[in-house]
Image (tube, rainbow, N blue to C red; front, side, top):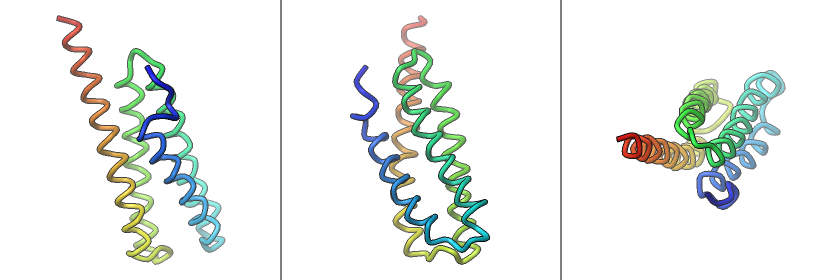
Length: 121
């Protein structure tokens, strides 16, 4: 088990969080304290779940929660576009980053579940 900070999913999620902070600062006041705060909390929780999954034997439990938060964050990004507080061009940047994070988390969960199933035989 390596350090969580060395994982690509950790680096990508940290990049997402830093970009998200810049986005939230530019949001109109009405959206900043509701939608913006919720988005940053989800991203911070995702980082915490990476640490938990990395140090746990039961990785898939934490990764399933991670993927639930991930889906919620994706939905909130779409709400930003629908409410026209984020341009489609801005969304494209976040969508690519979110896609990378989702693929990594799903692959990690699948690998963990397969390894667990093999060791249980």
